[in-house]
Image 1 (tube, chains in turn brown, green):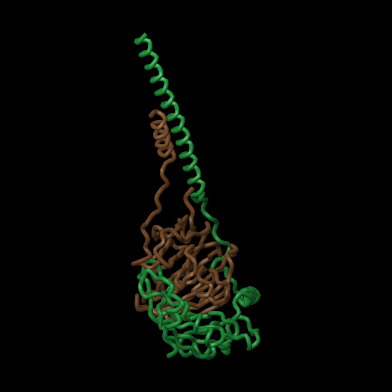
Image 2: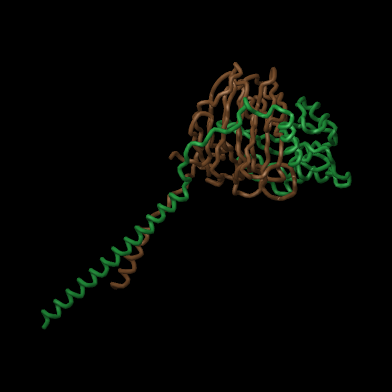
Length: 239
Length: 203
């Protein structure tokens, strides 16, 4: 009798003493929202350029290969007409990206231009270059040329020319991570700690690091923080 | 005698109680220590506080503007993106119509969110069409600008698939999923160059 009670008490004490692990945040945005984000945002007007300095670091989908899964580190420039430009490093299905035949997830530098129209919009995804997550840093830049035309640069060399966004100036800059997976898998994305930087150009041609606010969906599996104007750090925390 | 037996019995009871209390106390201490270890482990697993990063050495104002710098960037791209490299493999190894249709169909998603990849059988049944052209002719037909690093005469396969595909989306905006997409493949190397979500280029 005493022995049995003693064992029971010991078990209870052990369980209580061990504590309970914190529950994962289950607020998965994949379904109705489609994608999960952790970003720095600047809302302005008359923006005529965006420059981003983004490292090629490890980012992971963790759900295996699929047609739609990806995680990206990007900059976006939303136009007055609601079309938008984006560029950055995307880790996605290798065959989705370029059919290199490795049967694995792979990293590409990509830029894309999207027409106005919300859910009715069309999008062109331009593969720029195949890369590995070696920490090297890339500079992406959108420069307004004329009318609705924008030039796209990678590391100072022009790699594209957009004509479809329907915008001659921008009103919002976004910088950071986008994640999508095959199902609403909580906290499946993951990433290294690394720092993004961006500058925008105003209508007068002046470049500056913009003041930002943050947009962080819970349950992406990664988050971030901004330490100052034009800066976004993945998976970092204040000192 | 009976009284002495009762006293001994009470002493045994007290000893047992004391032993249990001691063991429970010791176990709680161990448990608390383990829990503390967990907290410490959790803290270690949490990203370490970081100082603000230094501003990057480059900026738009100082970006590459000379020929040598631009050439280096173009060479790096050509090395890691076959369509930007003027050289081509032997024609016998070029991408075939059958292969390109299969590859493009496999990029289809299911209709409703949350998305799931189609089965091989479902993907194979998707309506799709492919045509050969050059990247320059394709860009002109769609009213889009050329990639300055890819020769306009580069042969490509253009494939339109009537299946679902998702766009990369701006944060805070509704997801964009369309039931037709077009993919453009570099014919000599099989490299995907371009993907148009919601674009029906080949009928």
